[in-house]
Amino acid sequence: MNQSIQPIRLLVCVGPRCDAEGRGRALLADVQNAIRAAFPDELADGRLKLATRECLRLCTSAPVVRLEPSGDAFSGPDVDELMRDIAAAITSEK
Ligand code: FES
Image (cartoon, rainbow, N blue to C red; front, side, top):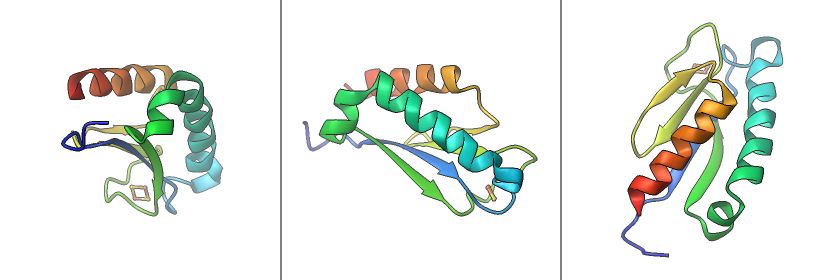
């Protein structure tokens, strides 16, 4: 791994607004499964990381995720679209 490349981080909010009725943690579970299936090598070598946050200060009526380093944020994202965005971010980091 090139040390000058910043890892892509996907932050999933499981804070009180996002996780109302368990929606944040349900999204987290879906995202975890999708990421493990789509990006096993990137997870293993640290190019991609998944983490949770208690509030991303972007509270909406749907769970929020943020991609770093781009800062792109998504409210109630479609998991398949999110995987495409992650793939694009990984490609642009190469
Ligand atoms: S609780 Fe999720 S962004 Fe605030």
